[in-house]
Amino acid sequence: MTDSDGWKEQRNRVERYRILAQETTDPIAVRLLHDIVLDLEAELELSPQSVDLDAA
Image (tube, rainbow, N blue to C red; front, side, top):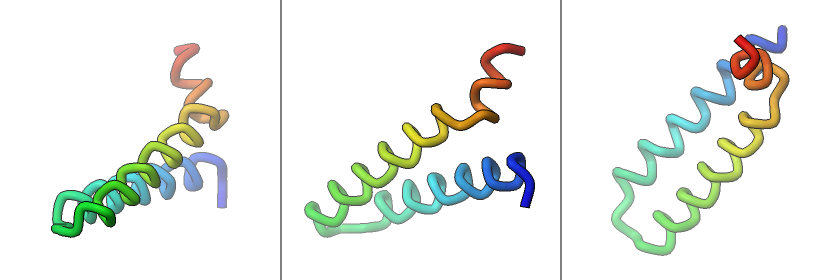
């Protein structure tokens, strides 16, 4: 898998967790999913793909 594929996979994972958080009714689960999304987004911001996009 290339870096680009990994970046796309990570973006897809973030989106899946966002959807889960919207569909979940348990407040504790919603908070946990929100924290997961924040962690995944932070990883994306540190990825080389993100750095390349910022430079462009």
